[in-house]
Length: 376
Image 1 (cartoon, rainbow, N blue to C red):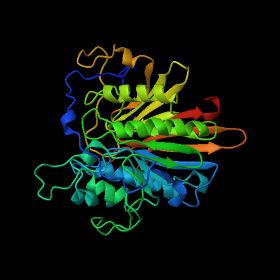
Image 2 (image 1 turned 90 degrees about the horizontal axis):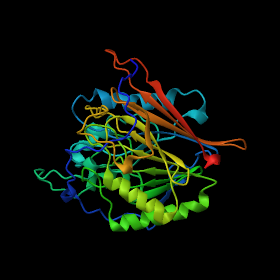
Image 3 (image 1 turned 90 degrees about the vertical axis):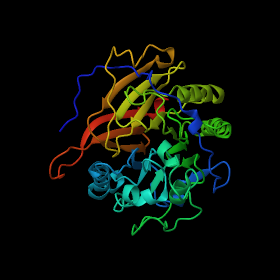
């Protein structure tokens, strides 16, 4: 079925009833890599083409209730990799936007929620951590550290079998830190960790690192796209979380200090799909894309206009327009970056999962957007 809606909301919202639970902040684990925490993608994908890069992206894939959804997402992304006719159009990897497991990030949840669903996905999987990945169950007798399992799966010192990966053939990834930058021929992908609190929080050390990363990428501005990934969505129109004011204030201040604004921002956390465009004072329009319908069973609805519990008349929400959304079904992104003499573009395609009794209907295209990198 196609996802349709009658809700004509065009602005993000804040949620009045939400509590900013900063006491849930968890200290970050020590980085396995060296400062400034860069990973050249060719260390993982040595044969990645120089002029075209295609990858899948979504967040919030975990959960044990109604596991059909997360398996459908994994199966459809795998199908794209295996059945796309032209090799250059096949996704080379999956970038996860956080919340790999629920409700807490302990090791024994990784096989049923991650390794088993993605056992047939052919490419490597990179990830930022979500709030559930970093949270700790106070009743769990083994008392692991925050992000202990996440670090073993995604931030290992070398690629090797994971002890709690069951019979999966997927090896650990070698991301150098819980916040880091993925260097690719066509894009610098800055990967943030926004911790456990409901609206996210960023340490002083990470903020300083982030501002310097923004400044460092300015030299590549004409040659590469600048992509920012952060789990907690700065802008959202949903009724479960709403927009994150802390993330808005953090990003606004960092962009102003660095004098650099990314070309696109991706988030998860909110369990639906939303695409906003934000107009900055210098005239640059930046898409803020929420892609958190990656498999967790419960989806988050968009707030109807006029609901006083979800105000949208705050100046922080000005110049931000909700262009398209889907809050009725799960889905995932395929991102394509391509550079030729004639063009340099970033294209995003969002696919939704149809729900049929036999699960034999393929994902269908719901939304497409494009950024001309030579217009920035």
